[in-house]
Length: 318
Length: 251
Image 1 (cartoon, rainbow over the protein chains, first blue to last red):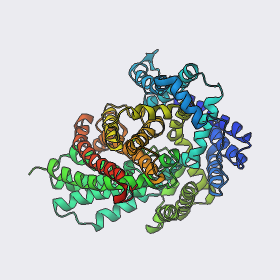
Image 2: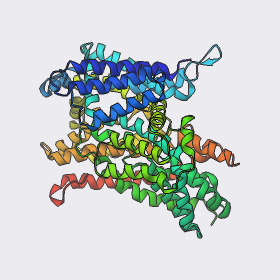
Image 3: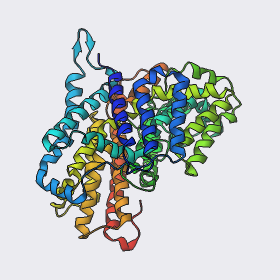
Image 4: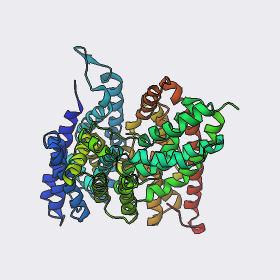
């Protein structure tokens, strides 16, 4: 069975290459900061399971200190200029889309063909991680297609990958660090404390009020915790099931499904959902780190209201 | 990846020690660190590590043990960072001129404009996510190399020249936002997505047994509402881009 470990090795080698190439990039005045940062990420992927818990803790602390003290610069590998790219675009034409389309195509094929495949009674791909394994496979194949079809230098995937990785910078590790923070929060009982506050101090006597408390609670809690998964068990155990389903006779499927989607409205509004809200501005080179959240909030709020109305209308006998 | 992706529920035996009853409000100190740190725009990575340490210390653990607990959770969540393996591909095709080609392609459609283009992308994103194909598109895979340049080029073609910097940045932010909204409010229609499985598991443990399909069908009304709300906003944004005199194209 192919497990995620294989993909970790692949990612580790990629980050190690970014670190080594970055260390030699004389155009970046902070090149050793970049080399150290991506080197630590490489170490985490290649040997994280052997570092021990404290070792991993020190590793994260190192990443945070490098980022916090502004030791990360932006590498400038040799790449093509604007005029050159226009000329290449004219020369290659629609061929340029082929590698970009290879990625989703291989991904779909892998999920449809490789995922159900069994060898000697065992699934070929670890079923829980099939998507990520397939994504890595698709990325490798698509890079191969790009190199052959577009006749780019063999080192270019690593140099160009490093260019983009440096553009994203420390924001790249934020989602993973926030997931780890979520685990610490969960086990320190942060969710229970907030859930207790919500359920004991807010009005849930009438159906509209209870629907509003549940939906707004899901969204607000998601904003604080950074993901709807953490909010769902707390609020559904506190408000959703005892009050909306048992007391007011709501349909549990509709209550839960629309409640979760109310949480997703919160995801659109929080910087703690970094992979959706803070990584994209970095990747798109938008200076305002909250620009994507600002574009999302005016959709999230009316959608949250729509969810409350939908739940009130669809989930309860009238 | 999905909107509620937690992945943080690792085994964390040592973390269990944090569970000792701690003073109620002290537990929330870590949340306060996050809120203040993000609002003051300190480096978020540093803020997160400090918040974790504060939460652990408030629960009465020695610093080394808190650091170990955080390190363990960080290691267990490495899968969160895996999608960056697509960057070498995106970089190579950019090097060979993909963004420029995407711009040329959209420039050929005289009537193309950024609002309807992004609305079309949103429909694509919602439908493919509903079919479980959440990873075939995304911020790195499609927004940076294709969607954002196409939307910018459509606006440029219409304006007949270069756009002001604020407008270009606003279009990019809207492209990213549209990708997120399309993905979030499409994926829950798919029966095997993490959040649906979480709900099935949670309800089962509460004595209510439901089929994933019974849950996922209730995501359809919200998906339609999301499209209508964001679609109207996209058209308004489009109009504002066309008449910048009436006001700055707000991000």
